[in-house]
Amino acid sequence: GQNIDQPTEMTATEGAIVQINCTYQTSGFNGLFWYQQHAGEAPTFLSYNVLDGLEEKGRFSSFLSRSKGYSYLLLKELQMKDSASYLCAVREEGGSYIPTFGRGTSLIVHP
Amino acid sequence: EPEVTQTPSHQVTQMGQEVILRCVPISNHLYFYWYRQILGQKVEFLVSFYNNEISEKSEIFDDQFSVERPDGSNFTLKIRSTKLEDSAMYFCASSSDRIEDTQYFGPGTRLTVL
Image (tube, rainbow over all chains, first blue to last red; front, side, top):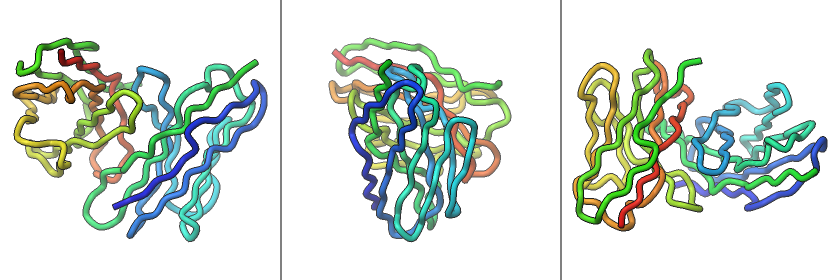
């Protein structure tokens, strides 16, 4: 089984930078996903990390450290529309390619 | 950009009734999935489907659930006799020709069981 831990809620100011952390414990690791989910809508794919390091995609970056069981999603130049839930999902190696989702971090961006 | 679509967006049903939720995956994708999300809780995997058969299912996916690909475009989830606790958002997802590829989610069907 897997244990995925994210903060429940974070707040930040428009224009600022925020880092959302995710820690996980798995018996084997085969990739970590970040999804954005606005209230009442579907999760939208943001990033995928399988090797250590930073993946940058526009205002969003995702970092992975496999040895520490740790990832973060970095959001720069925050906009009001970034207010959403951010879901960390981890895939275990060994047969299943189905990711297990964390409970998500609700990010509130205020002016 | 291609999208996963789902119908209906909202379904209200009486306990004990059968419901069918419909999905049209992205056209060149080969792997299909159903997830559910009870209000305020995390996204939970139900079932994956490939080559016209179930490839994996969770313990939530019991005998009350079934999936089907009735034609070349639709992918359906049937709940045979709904229970109050089946009330949730149901998301369909698809991924391309490799199972390890990223899954793309549809907009969801909100199922309310009364």
